[in-house]
Length: 75
Image (cartoon, rainbow, N blue to C red; front, top):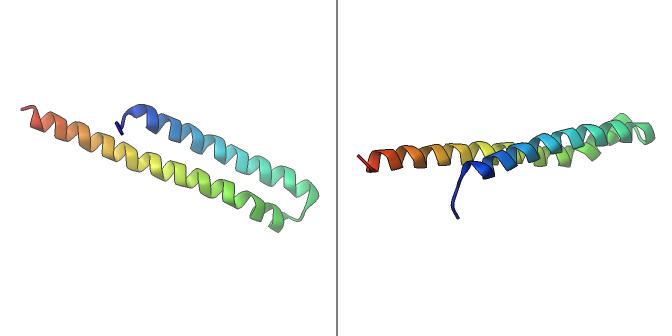
């Protein structure tokens, strides 16, 4: 699999969207259930957002290391 910046951008957009979704789930579920239950319902979505952000960070580091190594090997 070829790593490029497009994957990083998609992961960051997904992390942002999932973070917004977690707040929407928490806010709308507070209308129906208690705040503790609403927090429990939104937690899995927020965890997915954090995993996307972490994966994006790791991929950005890997892409940067590949570009540095590629520049060193061409010398």
